[in-house]
Every structure is written in structure tokens, then in C-alpha cells.
Length: 174
Image (tube, rainbow, N blue to C red):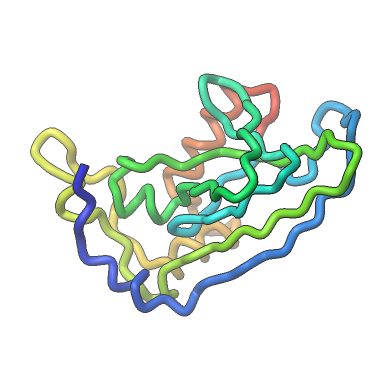
């Protein structure tokens, strides 16, 4: 599948973050206790260097499943911006973290986002007569502003994501 388009908002982005996250041991979590609650990311791709200890869980097939912990590899997660650019060819990845191990777990995710004023629109190779754009063009700043401001309507994929997660999983996103 070719994915070629004008993504200058990403190529010249200054919106990159590297997080260092510590998850304390939690071998027997209660229901709805998490190291990081279920969510999706808003960025473009997210690269996560894998830990030797499991803990990352991905939503698929109607439930959360553990991601294999393969040291020396990366998990590449799809964020909302990549879903928008690709017209859902690359779908959002709902996920959470529960460190059920008896030792601390560390994660180092790298987030890449468009510039605040970059226009986020489907690239031409991801739309066609049988696949019209799923999203209206927006700027990254406008998108994040709608998420942060409860007075503004949430982007459609966030509303739909919350509904799907409630319908498929005992863990609801609110």
C-alpha cells in the first residue's frame, strides 16, 4: 500500500516529545486500576522502545490483549493524526498499561506531532471514488484545542472511539 502525500507539517515539526515513564509493580490490580488508563494518542506515529517486562495492552477483537514484550524492538502506535492523514488506512490504537509484574516497568515513548498550524487533511493516495475523506481538514492546533476545551465539540473520531470502547470493553473511556 502506497502512502505518499504532502505531510510537510510533520516533516518540519518541532512538536516532538520523549517521555520517561515509571510503572510501579502492581501484580494484582483491582478492576479499573491501571498504570495508564485506556486511551488513544493524538499524535502522528508513536514509537515505544519495548521493555523486557510486559504491561502494554492493545484493544482489538473486542477486548484488551497484552502486547508481546520483545526487548530490542519498537511498538509503532497509530495516533489520531496518522489516522486522519491516511483516511483510516492506519487506525487509532486504543491501549492501556497495567504492570502486573513484581518489578518496576519503564517505558520511553517518542511522540511526533504536526506543527500547531499544520493543516491535517487526507493525503490524495488515501482517498478515491469508493473511499471519500472520513474527516474534514483541520489544523493540529484546532484539533487539540477541541479536545482540551469542553465548550467546543470533540473531533468525531474521539466521540466514536468512546462509543466503540464502551460497547466492546468493560473499561469505558469518558
